Image (cartoon, rainbow, N blue to C red; front, side, top):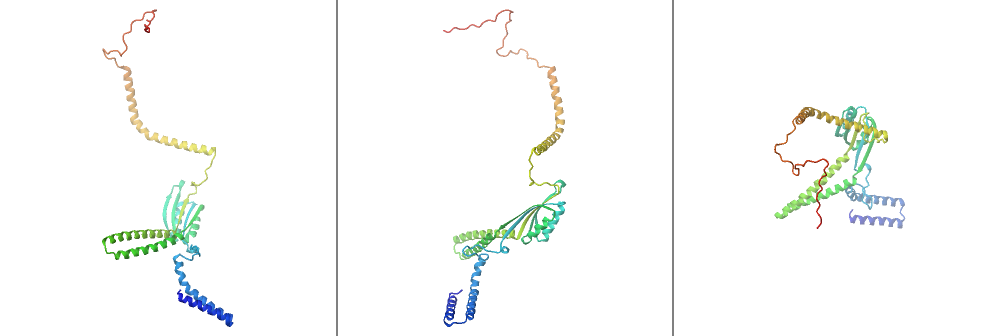
Length: 327
C-alpha cells in the first residue's frame, strides 16, 4: 500500500467520525461509509500480504512464523508394512500386483518362494498417496491379516525450507553468471568459474533432495508379506520349558548326526580307494620285519660306558669302593 493512500484513508475516516459526532448523521449512513472504507482497505492490503504467505508455504502463525497448513496441503510420507496369510501365495501376489497397477502404482520389488512347506512372497509396492488407505484395505482382504503397521512422516517444514534454499541458491547462481560475464582478467575469470561451479553443484544437490521428497510424498511404499497356511513366522512367541528344550536339543542332535553322516558318506569312496591298499601294505611290511629282524653289524663297538663285566662268584661280597679321608 502506498503511504499517500494510507494517509488519505486515515484522513477520510477521521472526517467521517467527526461528521457523525458533530452533525448527528444517521447511524446507517455512517456505518455504510465506514464499512465501504474498511472493505477498500482490506482489498488494498490483500496483495501485499499474499507474497509473504506464498513464500512461507501458507498462512503463518503470528510471532512464530510456523506454517499452519491444512492436512491436504501438508507434505506427508506414508509407509506401511503388512503380513497376510493366504491359501495360495502366487494367486494372492498376482491380485496384489493387479490392484496396485490399477491404482496407478507399480511394483518396486518381488521375492517369492513357491515351496509348499515354505510358500511366501514379499512385495514392495509403490502406490499414489491419495490411494494409500484404500489399497491397504484391499490388500488386507486377500486373506487373513496378521499384522499391519502404518507410519507417517511430516516433511512439510523440510519441503518449505528446501524451496527457500533453492530460490536463494538460484539467485546466487544467476549473480555468479552475471559477474562471470563481466570478468576482464584471467585470474578473475578462473576464480569466478570455480565459485560458479560450486554454487551450481549446491543447487543441483538441493534440487535432488527436493525431487526425492516429492517422490516419497507422491508415492507411498507398502511392504506386503504373503504367507502360506502352514508357514511359521519369526515373530511368533518363543515357547519355554523342559519339553521345548528337549525337543530343540533332539533336533540339533539329529541335524549334527545328519551332517556327520553326510561327511562320512563323502569320504567313504576315498577311504576305500586309498585306505585299503595302504592298510594291506602296512600289514605286509610288519610281517616281513618280524620274520627277518635286523642283524647287528660285525665288529661293532659296544656302546660307550659299557665294557666286559667280570664273572660273579657266588657268595662273594661285592667290593666296597674305597673312600678318601679328608686332609
